[in-house]
Image (tube, rainbow, N blue to C red; front, side, top):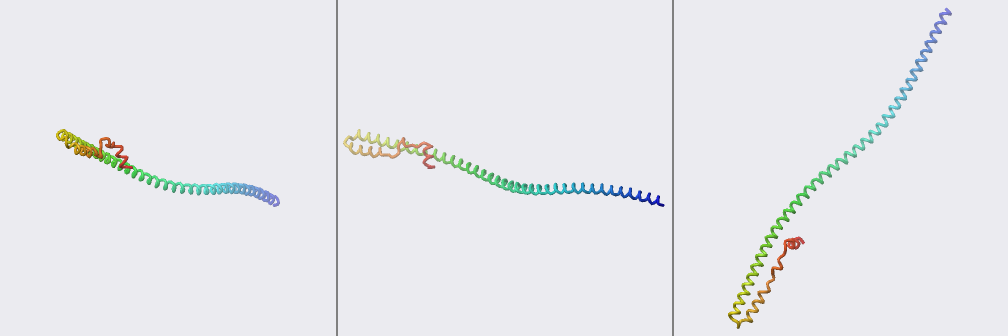
Length: 168
């Protein structure tokens, strides 16, 4: 019995040692898993912080993008209006150029008409003088008044001079 008892105690001691070894192994594994859990938790926290920072940056960039897109649309509209204004001004300039050409032609015709009329009057006065020398005083006065014509061929304005006067 004593022997049985000793055997049982030895057996129980071995089992106890085995259980202690198992408990120590499990405790070591538990500590290792706890360390890994803490490391994973720290990584998760840092990733969460990084994710929040990136989310804020993303929101700022999205707002900036929306603003840039609105600015782009506004610039696009402004450019379209500027192109239309430039085209309208070109059309207006073309019309003004045509008007200037017409006015110059009318001025030239008027100057030619007046010059021819002056020349005809002067020739008529000279013929009258030749025929009636006693009216020389009267003829001189007529030629003097005829030569006071305010428009001469030297006064015809060029197209660029007319533009300058019109748009000054």
